Structures are given as C-alpha cells and as structure tokens.
Amino acid sequence: MTRGRSPLVVALALALACSKAREDDPRATLTFVDEGRAPTTISLRTLTQRIQADEVRGYDPYYKKDKRFRALPLSRVLALGFPERRSLADAELVFRATDGYAAYLRGALATEDGAYVAFEDLDVAAWEPIGPQRANPGPFYLVWSKPEQVDLETHPRPWQLAKIEIVRFEVAYPNTRPPGERAPDDPAMRGYAIFRERCFKCHAVNREGGRVGPDLNVPRNILEYRPEEQVRAYIRDPATFRYGNMPPHPDLADASLDALIAYLGAMKDRKHDPKD
Image (tube, rainbow, N blue to C red; front, side):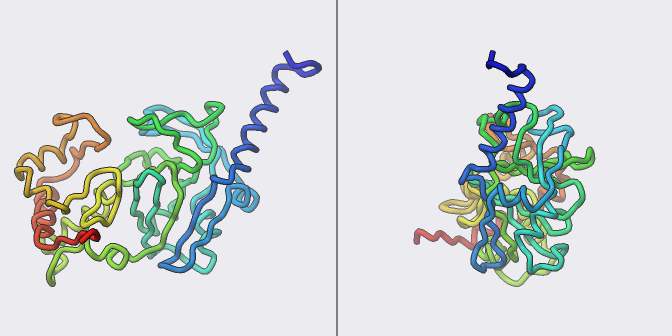
C-alpha cells in the first residue's frame, strides 16, 4: 500500500497517469489528406485540447459485448483535420489503418451523429485486444454509439486508425474500375459499386485497395483459379472453407452476388500490376 494514500486515490492517480501517457505518446497522431494536398498531422494531445471528449458506451460487434470508451465526435475531428471544407456531406473518405485495412465512407455517413474516434478503453487499464489476431486497437478506433449503428457492413470500425483521406474514389483508385464505357446499371458497374462499399476495406484490385486480404485480380483474377460457384459460396460464408478474418455476407442478395461476379469477370481484362 502506498504511504499516505488510500487505494482509491492510488487507482485514480494510476488511471490519470495512463491517460496522460497515451496523450503524450508521439505515435498517437492522425494524419489528414485532402485530395492529394500536403498532409496535416494532428497529435492526440492537440485533439483532446481542441475537442471535448465524451464517454461512449454500447454494444461492440468485434468484442461481442458492451464496451465503454473515451472518444471524440468524428464530425469534430474531421472539421479540425479539414478546416477548409465547409461541408463534407458529399465527400468521399478513406479511413486507413496501420495494418492495411482501408474503410471507404461517404461523407454523409462519416458525419452522422453517433460516430466517434475512441482513444481510450475505459473498461481496462490498457486497450483490450481485439479481433481474431488479438490486436491492440489503439491509438485510435472508430466506434459508433447508437444501437442501429452496430452493423459492420454499413458502419465499419477500423482500429489502429492512422490516416483519413478525402478522395474521389475513381481518381485515387483508377485501376479498380471495369474496362470500357459502361452504363451505371451494367452488371459489372453494379458489382463495382458493391466492391467499393463492402470489399475495398480488406481487398485490393490491381494493387489498389485494402491490404488485409489478397488482391482479387493480380497476378491472377480469383475467377481464374477458383470456380465461380466456389467463389459465391466463399463470399456467403468463408468459415465453411477456412477460418480467417473475412466475415460472412448472408445478407447479399443473389442479384448482388451476380453483380460482384460480373465485376470480377470484367476485371480479368483489365490487369494492372505496378511491378510490371
């Protein structure tokens, strides 16, 4: 027992010390890039000095239980990181994690009430490990506070968040678009839209996109070494094939799967590998 202090005082002092250490950590920074302009990097200390932190609690689909975090409203973080933007409602943003995960969010979603950037786990002294790899989610973890925001497909939660970029998807990732002039209702274009919303987070096409899962087009397109029906079944429920990080997609309608397959099939004719 520490001399002259009660256990409660000692616990509070330790908690404050841990919090201060996190805010003083030079690695605890977020980088903001606005359509290719020079990046701006802001420290956690500056973020917490400029933005009032809240306690956010609710069910976390990765932890599969209720969690509590100290967090900053994402809309305020974006306003600080992109001060020249009067509105982000029509913007396209990519949230990049240090492990290669890249979440694509439309501005209207990113500025939705209930989105927070967590920087402290209030349930444990340090961050509770997360995901199949038992990773440390810090220094920043995107969380959502409302019950209707727990679906990972519609409200992604990148941990180890390091960079937020405003990009026009087709400009930043030109080699993910199907070849040729196509109408928006073309099956491959509909599949491309699904890829952007659902698959880009983990997978790349032509080396453009996420780095968690394998590239779907180079050096060989997935349909060049896996039968179409197997690819469909794998997308539906990957765990029936092997254990890994890819989530199941039972909600994808047959028409959506058809569109994804059409997209992948079209990309066989558009290979681009920066190594070449």
